[in-house]
Length: 277
Image (cartoon, rainbow, N blue to C red):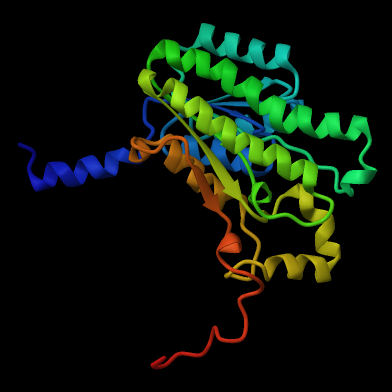
């Protein structure tokens, strides 16, 4: 029987990733880069992948100065590229314990104005790209009898505004795909989950900083009245990747600052406290 000291130590180890190998597709920037950094900080060997050669090599080089990291060029929207990445990792590493995919795009346009090309571009990367990734790395993990697959959805899977219908549909599809795959690979010891962020301050949204009326309005939809930093979403990725989440699969983990918990900006009564009787 374990002593209390042993149990306390075992709780600490649940969050560590020592000896594990992780691939992060989308590691050149944003949430993907932050995820690679936090997984490496917790002890994992990180395989950074992205279609942007300079960016992904820069991420891996920064991490490699302090932890184990590799860089590969791979296009999340190209099946041959994703399969080649999976084959390379399977050939060079005995195990693959964690696989994370983050790339996505959106075309903000009213649905009736969407062109076929725009629809294909959004759906091919967001939904089909996630499928390609989950299939390729799910096959490796089922063969190895274990692992954690993590996809990236969005609050736009459930809450929308005009111009985001197609993007939201792809993000809703990702959640259902995660649930379905989780039901199929659980018997192999493989877990499948999604992170669901709201507004995250990355290079992709930098132009909005020049429009404070939009930036601040979006921030006001959260209970914290601010945008998330990429590392705050990456921390959720690290949790889902770790043994601390060993009984969590088929879930969509909200990292939204309370966006979906409230209806409208959290103002007015936030500083009023007292007996409500």
